[in-house]
Image (tube, rainbow, N blue to C red):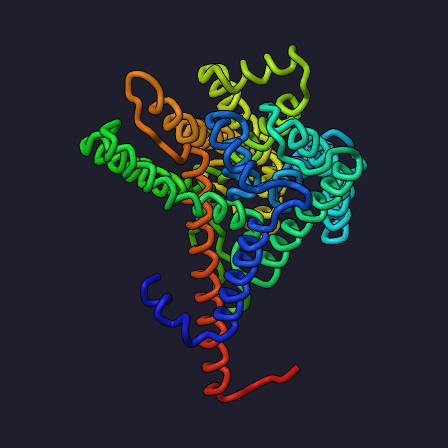
Length: 439
């Protein structure tokens, strides 16, 4: 990889993609500082300082600080992610949608369009709840909105919906014209921008005597250990051996080589953590915004009791790990492709038996990956409590997302460099060859 990185300045196309990705992320960050019309941004920041440790902290983290500024990007990409989750569940529930998804690019385009419609609906609901909450001063009774009423509410809903759709568009543009998954990069960038503030908070705690130097060293050691553990697991694979038989064509012998089918230990990546977080955030946001005592008590119970919250969160992560793996991996298709290409798993009969074997292996490694993701996402929040009291400003979900997205970004850059080097090699060999065929 180090040798490939040195060739980046000599690849104009990659430079353009990297520059485009950076510019789109800059545009997103600039939009975070554009407030909703009709509100007092300074008052919002002060109120958020008073609501520390609530659902608003989680929402604010995933929006990159846009929520505490009452920005036009306050909803971020979470409505789109929530809509995608619902659409994925509906695809599995309704055969018509599942058949549409299997139609190829046209079918997937229709499914994505339905997800966008769902995003608009979710934005309208969340935007209206946020408008009502701003009018109430985030439950404090403070005056945040200059002129309350339906004019402000409708304007806020339209502004937040347009902002969320624009963020979604930025993510899609990065995916198509840049490098990496745009939505994941936006979420990772939103989390990374909080690093300077976290370091300053640690310095403040040391200066006030609330945190010792030994505690700071322990925090960094644990962070490095967790990051190293994430990198190790994300890079690990379960290799299923595949053998291709020899074929004699004329006087030449083809095939006979051994290969393998690589299956990642964490087959679903950071998706389960993002899905579980967004699925918890959506109903909790509504419960927080609606001023009904029973619903408010439910929200306080969910986010106030660390044991209940982490148990539900870990259960959702494990569920989505299996769910997403079932979407991206179909053992029957993998077995069928092996059979068509003449490959087979040694000791396993081709066809149904191979599909059952792959499904068995997938089930085992998915369980390991799901437990690993749940552990990484839960352990930092437990270390914040008694008797450890270590101030982790970034939870395990944040670490997993940032490290996972970074690894994926580096891998895509490396794949681009390898592809470019291979194409250059082919062109060079074609020019030197004795015969060239132009089609």
